[in-house]
Image (cartoon, rainbow, N blue to C red; front, side):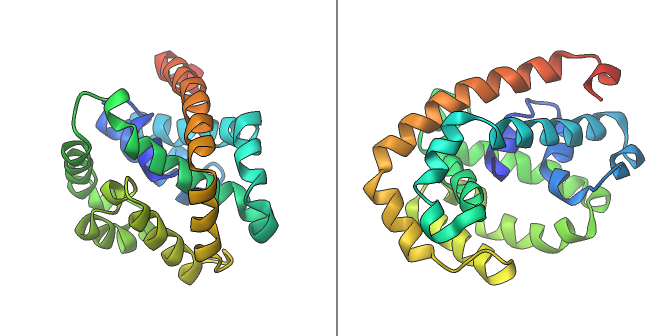
Length: 199
């Protein structure tokens, strides 16, 4: 899952949201350096990633993208699924997406100096561009894929990826909904565990 989904699956606890948001940038046992609730968010992030990578519905979605993306197909699926979370947001939250994104920005900026260096570098741009909110639009997904291709080893196949999204839009949407029900339940179960069990 990508940023928007990770944040949503964190529930309403701000420090769990922070941990889940920075999860990709905390390696090995470095999570032990953080306060308990941020640590819980980091560990939840890892659980979500494992659950996503091994879920048969996600694998089915990713197969449509493997022709051009190969082993990176799952990353594109993550981004696509954030789009469908944005599109279907009202089914999962009573708070409008724009207000939710604003509240998340506030949490992250208030805790700016807690964040890893890499997150500090991209967060101001992400906030200014309202990238999380933009995931709900196809143009926002296109921009995200282009940014990822420019700053990582992800192949530059944005036009092709968007063609696949258009071609299989309803199938991706249906698969997202099936998967998201499963991952929501998994995350809720993890959050309900006492902190020491969540480790």
